[in-house]
Image (cartoon, rainbow, N blue to C red; front, top):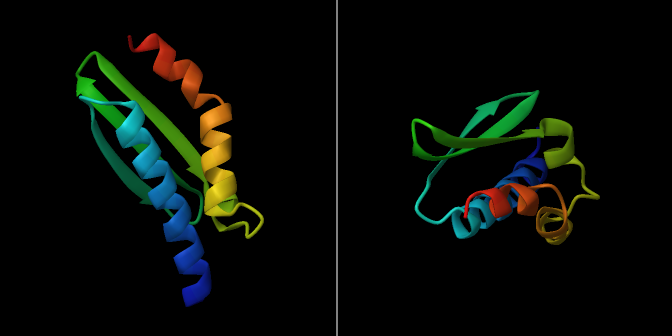
Length: 87
């Protein structure tokens, strides 16, 4: 994988990380890579309250998924529905 691909992937990962940290206040947010399949983010507050988001590697590396577009998809996609359940 080229440095450009790595930079693009890392930029998308950072957008997701920052979104989750902002939305899941009071949770520990961790992430793990399962190359070349996926990247999993976990937001944990207690042993009973844990949420996971798995993003496929193809989505992270797709150049049409810019960090801006990734952020828009986070804000308008499925994650806001999970956040509503945390209150």
